[in-house]
Amino acid sequence: MKNKLNFPGARFITHGVLALAIWAIMIAVNDAVDPLMSYYLALVGMYATAMFGMAILVGLSGQVSLGNGALMAVGGYVFALTSLNWQTVPFLGLPWNAVWSVIFAGLGGVVIGLIVGGIAARLKGPYLAGLTLGLAVGIPAIANRFPETFGGENGLMLTVPYPEGGYASSAEGGEAEFGGTAADEFVIEEPATEQAPLEGETAGGEVADEDLLSIEDLGGVDDGGEVLAEEDILTLDDLGNDAVAPVEETFTEEVPLSDVPDIASDPAGFTDPGGFDAGFILEQWQASVSITVACIVGFIALNLVRGRQGRVWQAVRDDPVAAAVSGISPSGAKISAFVVSSLFASLAGAVFAQLLSYVGPGAFGLGLSLSLLVGIVLGGRSSLLGAIIGAVLLVWLPEFVLSLSADRGWDEQITNNAPNLIYGLLVVLVVLVAPGGIVGTIRSFWDKAAQKKSERV
Image (cartoon, rainbow, N blue to C red):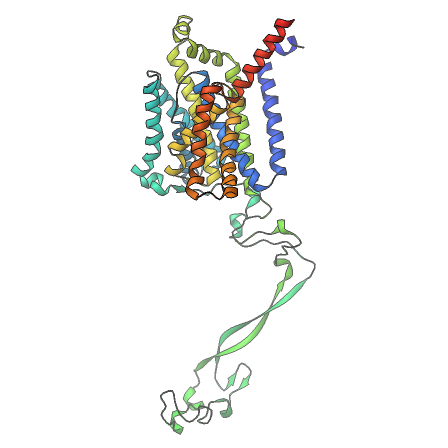
């Protein structure tokens, strides 16, 4: 059986089947859970996408990065600017949609990765950390330097092109769409005001002297309290042939009851005046996008890590001199790791933008870069599975702290800062006790157990 899986391309097929199976399972879970859990799944997929690149950059190639949050900002802003300003694909002329925005976000990440990687390949240690830290601080701040393009501190609000089935088409002019009911029609009565000519008759018949107001009707005085005389009262001659006066009447309009929503019997068939289909769950759609991107990126990362390129990165990490003697370019390996990491981070930034329907400096601050580094350290620096575990921790831990603070009655300031404190304590604990993270520690115990078993045999 092992020999049958050694044919060319077997690794791609195996990894493709694995990625497809994970995608199908996660989509089924997404369809079965409530919208809040779907939102958490979307966040996990987004973080996992970014940390796949962190696993390659930090774990396999041995470089330090404190700026992958800034690389996510590149993808988010490219996604936003292309979505807001482009109607067709350049050179191809195809209609623009969110998929093209994600693709161009990835291309933007590749370009930035080439530039930053070319500089980072000449640096190591604290100097490399300082460069990436400068990226984390500087790239989001560019939005404030060019507010006309990037929206400044307020950022850019997005109208993400969601699936066509979720919204009414623009040809309907934003009118509501409703499902039908059993009744045929009903009558609406409402007042209306018309201008009726007073040429001897009203809308209901002829005008007579008794139809006009008299002194007795007015109480004998006007609004100022003065006594009225006969000449102060209007007559038919005063009105003239061309005079008009408002006449209030009641009219009826028959409206089919099929045009009225029956939300109780068919809530999924209701569409509000904005054209949004209540049967369309936004969080589930966002989670499906995030899961799909994460599975595609995971498939690419798995093939890179398990292939020749992964061995090249590990060789440069372990001994750059020996790798150079073997014909490997250490600079080229470092640049390629930065490019791949930047590509994955930009794709994660595009997903993050459609999750928030917003991009701005506050969404891609230094805290995001540090969170990615903490996640990959906790999960396991050299493991793609560790990246997924780290993503789950980044989403679960703040929610755990919120629930704990609600039970204990903590102040808001403590609740907001507790996750960062716990992140720091966990990183210190992992560095001292389990340098390989969760996955590395489990793998180390497994190897020791297997070694002891073989010694006994």
